[in-house]
Length: 149
Image (cartoon, rainbow, N blue to C red):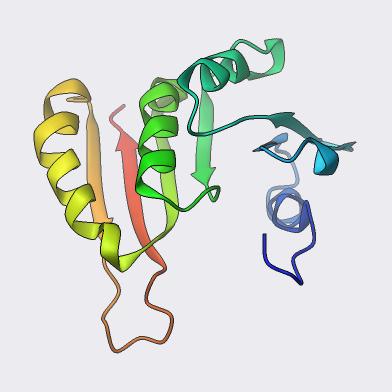
């Protein structure tokens, strides 16, 4: 989180946008975890598969998710590790978004999607959205994934 970031701000924004939703968040910084009306946060280290599996074993997280947004570590290794442990937790018709993919990680993502995801996750649609290099701060590329209904 940047110097001026406010822990939980985006979770509160999602809660406001979706007034009937329960919002879950996860972070490696235990000091910023909190619980509020319709928001619950959990500890997770994206680089540790066992910790991600532990996250998904929490009773509140056992139901499939409608939307999962990975706005965490912003590294290929962290995003890929968390995706591998989390994608099966999306309900049919649900979406998974990896935010802020860095330009220098795009080739790794292309290779990973072609080599691993198409066979392992055959019931999902993947779209790597690359921003034009003329866009300021174009390290905000996205990976969009939809689980087929």
